[in-house]
Amino acid sequence: MTLVEHLDELRSRIIVCLVALGVAFVVCFWQSDLLFDIAREPLNGRQLTTLSPTEPFFTTVEISGYGAAIIALPLLFYQLYAFVLPAFSPHERSTLRPFIVAMPLLFLAGVAFAYFVVMPVAIKFLLNFNEAQFDTFVRAKDYFSFFGLTLLSMALLFQIPIVMLSLTRLEIVEPAFFSDNRRYAIFIIAVISAAAPGGDPVSMFLIMIPLLLLYEGSIIVARRFGRPPEEAIRAEVSPGEAG
Image (tube, rainbow, N blue to C red; front, side):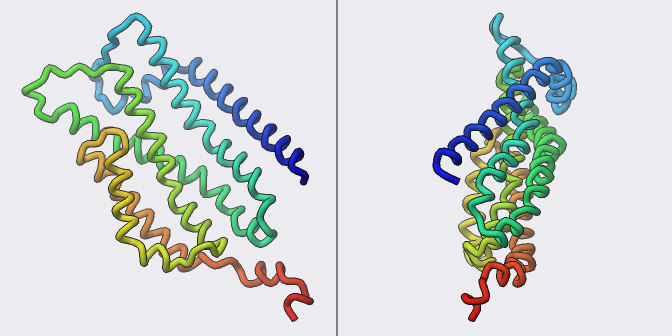
């Protein structure tokens, strides 16, 4: 493909992504009451507060945006994958194709973990911490921002195994690279967990522990499946080159 053809394809895929986000946003805005009910579940009935006449509208727009991003991101990942895939060799393409199934599954696993594990525990800890000293009101805008960012962060962080396996399957790094640099990975994961929405010790450990397990599990899988199949590599070598 020429440069112009590549740019034309990129434009087409960007348009598809924008349309998908737009449609998802419209659906989420239409069903904003359902989104609010889902997002409020970790609060266990605690009421939310707004502080300005415009806050209910902009909060609805915000939660609809988070919902649209969560719904559309698997499709966005696919568009990115489909755009860069032709740049790889045949055996590299066959290596990467299984990841197109794993990416949305891990994405959904990250969303589910954030919703059912991280959010309830973090909200309970944060709102009950030293509660006798404060008359705590939960502002709707702040809560839904925390909720949306937590779900998106965990969904993206659950893509770590895909990145690790891609690097090993494409022979960019050896599986031993990840085990040899485990201490640096633990440090980076700890920093990411501390910087994630919430910032409290409970949320940090709730995020850090599954990421460490994913990292260690990815090392094991990379050692077992990290190398591309030998027949795929041989298919890349012509008879003249093989001789």
